[in-house]
Length: 411
Image 1 (spheres, rainbow, N blue to C red):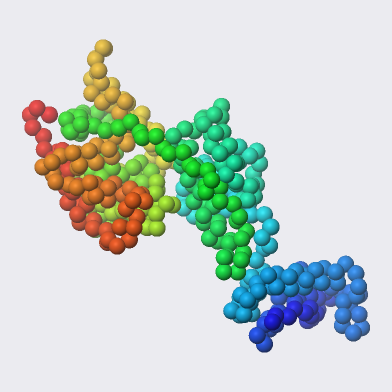
Image 2 (cartoon, one colour; image 1 turned 120 degrees about the horizontal axis):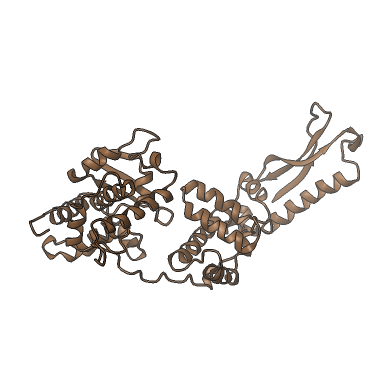
């Protein structure tokens, strides 16, 4: 049985005293501070609080504590006095929780710009900066999804639509973990919108890859050094291929290069995996020249791309601009480009295609999956029981590089 009584312990320098609540449970007591301050005129000669607004405030706190404790029922018997106080100091279940405020902190923790973009789009949809998490119902998510693809300003379709909704779903899950406590019946995040509303599946993208012949032609392509974007695109695309399709965001941010290995957390999946998308790749000798060209000793980064470009977005734009320029080099009027509609991501696809579709290499589908560092629910349980074998991935990369860099006179 827990008891609650107020006490007036001492006066401060301003001749005020803060009322405390003495919580007693299992013959152990603790003092809990209240927001109520008294001066001498509020206290009667017998030490009790005079009738009035301040006594009403104190009584309201005591009544609230007693009512919330009564709701615990038999659970109270298993709690210590400190656990009881922690329960009582939790905000009430109907106290609003700002989803946007939580999301901003979340984005900062994971350094994920996609989270910020998702939050900003949700703010535009709702029309205000503060959103109570319990407003995020299934109906609201369906309406938000429709708004994303039909809005006049930069409609979001396919991957962006699915990504924003998936990030909101992930943040809701983490908010429940932080603010709900089923042991003590605390349910502050009440909504489960994605139980009723299914996130649209991402359309299967058009395959963006290069044939082995195109890869070899691209690698040997002579790019004038005066073409800054084209030179960057040529170097970085080859580097990406040599590092098993490492994307531009991770190249921009990577900060660990030790014992000949680049290690990083893949930004695209780090919020969706328990290992934060950790990956490590052995830098092959073929990449050493490009590595030296772009190495950095500043800001703790492996490469100096962050010194060359303001953001990873402008870095990625420069690469794709350069790739289009490369496609036009040597192209005469009426001729078809050697690399039509070439995008940076094609080199990641190309690595996977060579690895899996070249019988003489003997690289199985699961090794390709592991090498690409994909997030997959199908493999999640299996991966819990298997230690990551980077040596196997290193060998697969070595075999792919040997095959592609095996030039002959016809290439």
